[in-house]
Amino acid sequence: MEVMPVKVQPEERHADVSRAVVDIASAHGFDAVTIRALAKELDSSTTAITHYFLTREQLLRRAVSDELSRFEQGRLFAIDGLTGFDALRKVVAYTVFDSPSRPRRFWMRVVIGAQRDPILRSELTRFNERWDAAIRALLVEEGIADEAIDGIADQLDTVISGSVMLAFETESNTVAARRRGLEALVEMIIAAAVR
Image 1 (spheres, rainbow, N blue to C red):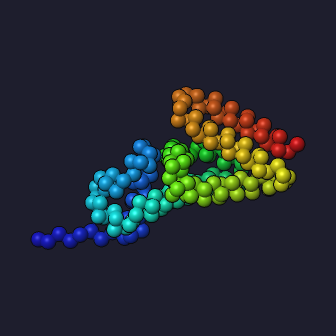
Image 2: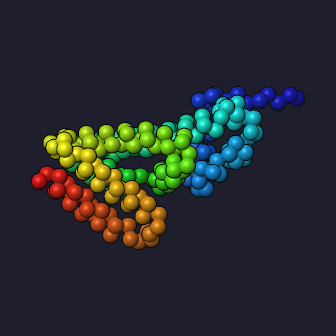
Image 3: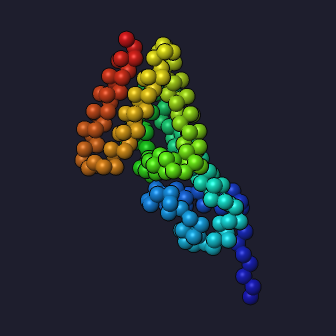
């Protein structure tokens, strides 16, 4: 009896490989993302991987873009119906506390890897441009003066980035206190913005 190979749709295989890249990079960093490691993670052959992604660049671009887009979709879902400062508060809470740890851990790996890897740097830059535009739009909704928006957005980015990184270094029993502290800090930034 002849066994026929299972036909896999290209989009399905792309998604499987992207998820495997995210899993490996989140756990071990981007240096650990190799064709062999992906084949092992997917219980597949290296040929099956390179059939869909000819280069590591293609593979990384797709995986980073897919995961950061999923994170953005979660952010949009979290603020559904909210505007201005209410949406901004929800974005901060979602990004730091309420989103799954996997995309936050992956984002940290992208930030670290972007220092050495031009592919990661370009994907991070694209994500940051969309992120900054979203934050700025929320500030504009509140009537914040144009000349103040960049400074406020930078303060929020710094607070959010630092809080995400800190979350992986602290005990889970401090989450409630950290959440209250972050909420107070965001309120201070908002209060300074409306002066």
